[in-house]
Length: 426
RNA sequence: GGAGAGGUGGCCGAGCGGCUGAAGGCGCUCCCCUGCUAAGGGAGUAUAGGCUAAACCCUAUCGAGGGUUCGAAUCCCUCCCUCUCCGCCA
Image (tube, rainbow, N blue to C red; front, side):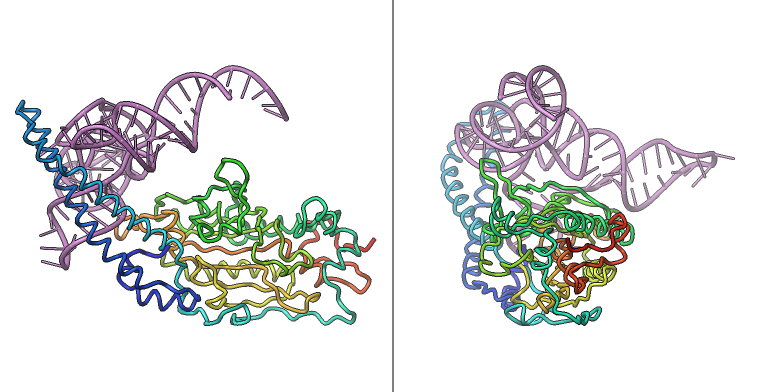
């Protein structure tokens, strides 16, 4: 959520910046609502003040045994007036808060203009895509060849966008999670955390998935207000919801592996082949809760932490700065890591690292006590995938395939695989 | 599933219709005293919003939402959550 004061005082600037995100702010509506709010609020509060003064007098009079009836007559007419004013104020405030909840975060200065991922700006590349002396297969064909990645069986039990994996492939999938967690905890200073996979709507509101993106979530049936998490970002970030942290507790660095569940409503027909875009996938997520002055540097640092995983795995990638139109609701800036996939002959997103400034913190009421002011102030949140596990598996399978269909695993995984260094075709 | 207890400020904890935004303690900040290591005295210290140049001031907030009342942290209703005991399951 944006600072309501910013919207009140600098609405033109806000509207201007939101245009970069292809969001049209209804300036006239907000301004008229705000004018009405001011008037009604002053009226309501002065009526309440009047009543409070009278009530106190009644209390004192009663205590000293005076006749309170004349005083009661004086306040009689106030009740209905206050109720009416209060109701009107509530309506205005509700309308304002409904509106402000659906306004996205402002983009950072460095966010490029553009409408789609085609307009994202490449910042750097690492590694050179391998030259194949044969026609490389994609992970679907390779998986079928090995009989270890099975979409048909998954489709029978659950439908499209699910997968069943067997044997070495299932093990590789599990081992990648282990590998990522170890690197982030041992080398990057994150502390591992285990969290619920079902969260309430308040948590989803906190990180920005609700109220705007309800249709992207899986909500459980029944009376409980619970949703399957679309990313570990939701439960992990909400760890500090409604908290006031001390300065010496920051930064907090969490790394967490969870499954993620997404309805993928609105992506019909997109990435239907293979396991690029599934309803259920595993992800290792890094979340940092930081002092406001640190978030920009931490965002760069955290992106670097995700890059380290790709580098250790020897997977070529590039870093792109998302353009306004491709930027998410809550983020002020997002750097995507795109891994090279020979089977698709292109770079595909494998990690998304974002700075949210105080946008999520305001929704969660996550604060820290600033020693300089002594006051609770909003923290900043930064997060990124480190990495999406399924897509990492795809990248390994496709990049490390041999002409005979075998897959020579990156050195760094051998010990995790219990010595298994090659996944051979059956 | 059954029975009971409870949700109050950064934390702990009193209050159970009327100067209570809330005693007391801890923590924190500032000042004083003392000076063999840890203690004593004093003052201050909630959040959000409105108005304002600013201070003052005003409003709201004691889990959430309704109700009763001139007046609710306190009474009534609904919901959420936590804890304890019993049962059930692992």
